[in-house]
Amino acid sequence: MTRKQIRMTALTLIIATSSLNAETNKNKVQPNLEGIELPENYKDWKVISASHRTDNKSMRIILGNDIAIKAARSNNTNPWPDGTILGKLVWKQTAEENWPTAIAPKEFIHAEFMIKDSKNYKENGTGWRWARWLGKEQKPYGDDKDLNQSCIGCHTPVKGRDWVYTTPVELP
Image (cartoon, rainbow, N blue to C red; front, top):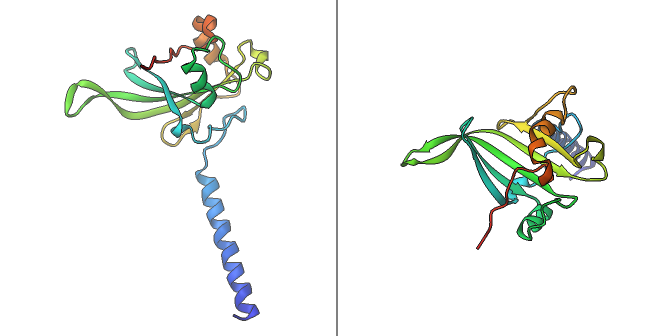
């Protein structure tokens, strides 16, 4: 291969890599307004619990990172340890097509997360930060006028449970 061919090959690789990186970055989920990133590999986390809301006919699977799973399995959840991340995946519900008395997930609504860091998040009085991404596009939710305040307001009834509604399932 001549030097000219090597340079052309290298230039082609650089252009192809730049295009691939631009496409990858374009499809990357954006952080929320506080800079919280969608947790990496959350889809591989273990299940902590499930819930069903009758008011808006939605169902949720609650996942946890390794710290959350260890805390849930050892009943060490009040308070949850620093480093805990709880994820809630939410779907509209529907009757299962082949089993009409069963409820099944339909349209994906959002993914939301609670992140525990009692030192860095103490200014809001909870030790938690919340973040939500909407739809399959996972568009960051919220505006700079609210950030965590609506989450705190909703979670106030469970302040005595370290601001967490989720009750971990007991495993046999």
